[in-house]
Image (cartoon, rainbow, N blue to C red; front, side):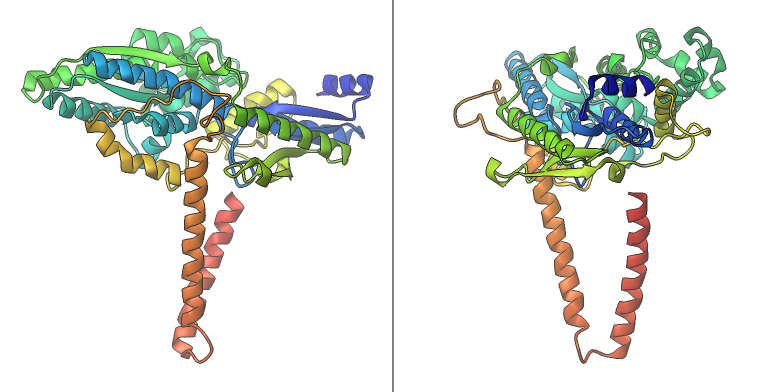
Amino acid sequence: MEASLAAVNSLKLDGLVIIGGTYSNTDAAHLAEFFAAKGSSCRVVGVPVTIDGDVHNGFVETTVGFDTATRVYSQLVGNMATDGNSAKKYWYFVKLMGRSVSRVALEVALQTHPNAVVLSEDIEQRKMTLTDIVRDLADTVTRRAAAGKNFGMVLIPEGVIGSIPELRTLISEMNSLFSEGVEPKEVAHKLTPWSQALLAYLPALIRQQLFLERESSGAVQLSQINTERLLAELVGDELNRRKAAGTYNGKYATICSSFGYQARCSLPSNFDASLGATLGATAASLIAGGFNGYMATVRNLAGPYESWEAVGVPLVSMVVVPAPGSSLAQAGAAAAAAAGTGSSAGLRPVIPSAPVDVLGGAFLSLQNSLPSWSQGELYSNPGPLQFKGPTAELRTLSLDLERAGHMKRVGALRTKLDNIRALCGPGCSDALLTAALSQVTSLEEVLKVLKTKE
């Protein structure tokens, strides 16, 4: 941070724009505070740019890169689904980028209609174990085999391994040891007995990948773990048990793929190009206006370009202090050690990754569609990214679905409030008024607590 200050002073910069995801914008928030404390006139502004789409909250509707990446992935997945429906003899297990959140997998699923999708947020909501996930996938394979369909498509986010309870505990322990500077060859010996047993149980390839080069924060690099191969093999083992028991008589052949840089190297979609240009102009305007520690963002992105609204939001409004011992705290502590910041307790305020909203319109749309997708061949192949023509200005489906779902729930809440107002109008009984005041007061207190936690 001292070196950054020296650089901007040497170059006489008016502003420094930091683009990236949650880690980069967390750094922007800390750097802005540091510059201000040192009396620097250089303003720091963050810009949300990440294909994961994990910078997502009430201020940020989507990030630069998410539209492009999901469209490219959707073409690739659509191509494979078309091939699978033609050959009718392979199960495709495809891993998509997405680190700790499943937004990419969700969007690609909405665009391509696979037979099964494994989402990290769904696993956490349903408290599923590794065995539960394998059985669910095996059930889908078994049902399709009974209909003479020994093929299909399964989508998996790269970070799903960190959402499985057994593996999450193991990875949390490993991240903690890595952050303490323990050498990789000594980590296995310092794990708890349960985690040691789990590590020994995993296939040799997965064990090896857990110790590969780590993230800049010091955490295990989940993108390097072949989760798709792990699940494909475990499903195969479960099907063999079912075949021995006489409950499955199909054929099971798999092709595993991992899509990552195929999308990161793409030319940007028209939407992302426009969003990037708008955010760049917004960042420059914030700096020219003397605003320090802000994020440039844009509202009303689901609408036409003319309705977009450029906004500056204080980065501190997105920052949280993670609970001691949490994975977020461990990642923050590792980043703090690397940056030379953070408190003596090792806690560092961070901008958290935003998971998929399991009550949101996009997720609910997927849940409603999966039963028919799992049994049929309703695959959708959106084709390559277009820059001209009627499909060039399309937006991601989740952007529209989440906005529509959110507004629908806001409307439902307003209707409930209007009903309460009508029931408790002038002339209502004291008993009715007392009951309403009691319930609404309790609700208000609960909402205050939830708002504080947000």
